[in-house]
Image (cartoon, rainbow, N blue to C red; front, side):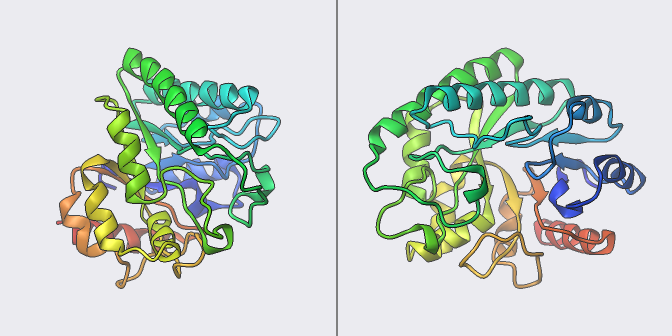
Amino acid sequence: MHKNYFVSSLAFLGQPVDKIVRICIENQINLEFSSGMPFMQNMEEIYLNAKLSKMPHNYFPAPDIPFVLNLGSKDEQIRKKSIEHCKNGLRLSKISASPFFAAHAGFCIDPNPEELGRKIAFSQGFDEALHKKLFRESVLEILEYADHLGIDFLIENNVLAPFNYNGVNPLLCCDSGGINEFFKEINHPRIGLLLDTAHLKVTSKTLQLDLSDELEKVRHTIKAIHHSDNNGEIDDNQPLGKNYWFLKHMSHFTSLVHVLEVKKQSLEEINEQISLLQNFGN
């Protein structure tokens, strides 16, 4: 597999981590250790000892006591835990020679772990300006550490699904307006956008925005890309086919890191989708 193409551990969902690592070593797959992996006391050790090209992502390694990683939380305990988790992710990335570490953009609310990917219960009384300020402060603290290590810290765009939108958006950095506002305020060489194409697709449909236009507006901020597909209604990590909306744009992003983030795939399906991305990227 080409060095800038990775496969998320989500593709092997339900399999034990030692088996996932073995499969990836045997098939020369670069592995993104992602958020869906369960808590294990020795998960960091497993990660660091895995003899393959790898990188940690977002909520990996999962903590013993689950929490929602939220760099924009007004709950100081949650925000500090989120900052320290990201610093640890950067540390692991540095040790394993990973290209970067990325985390999701902040929220204006603190959902329960079981609400992620589903309808989130929230009141409309949140202070968006405060949460944006807290998110910026968190990122700046993390960037100071990223600078010290000499590794990039990327922010992944959030997904605004229709079932979580009633005219009020509690999530930061979903559309081009929010993304560009954030990057204008955080002008740092170590920051960048991990574009999740599936998140952008759902958000664009929810807010009735033109998808390709949204991509063009944030293009200058993109440093890496997560690939999966969906029906525009829910982010469910469906596989890529020849009608995948981003294929026509691949040639503009050939030098970036690309991560296949699809759920429960066979080796044949993984290889087909990686080939699809590479062929359109040439």
